[in-house]
Length: 177
Ligand code: RP5
Image (cartoon, rainbow, N blue to C red; front, side, top):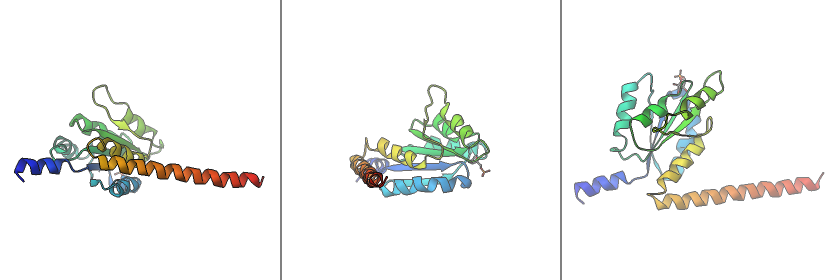
């Protein structure tokens, strides 16, 4: 295989970067990283702050596409500028997770992430919505990776089955009233 084909193959791997503003965000992000891995997605996770390590954040975002990353998930709390700053330096899709890490219950993080100016979108999930961020990343990657779409369909079937089981339980409980 020539160099170009090898590079293409490398770039085509389903790879997601999970960037967190602080190690204190990690407990919230564990389920996101686990879910991505369960789907067979390669994960590059690191601590990188828009404010404390701005050069590292810019450098990472500028090189992310070249490094084979398909989607960036960025989580931050308080004045949560990390997802928007990364989005400013790349055309890769960026998903922001507002972390509940201050006295404002995450509303500060949510507004900091979601209120992006036109031209630099960040797809924002719910406060601490780590698993939805992973699922959205999988859905975005499904365009290039049909095996992920198949796994996503299977995931949704299992979700629906769980709801049906809960409904059956409810119907039984209703008989006792
Ligand atoms: C943000 O400030 C981080 O994303 C974290 O959610 C919050 C607190 O960070 P630490 O002071 O715990 O490092 O930048």
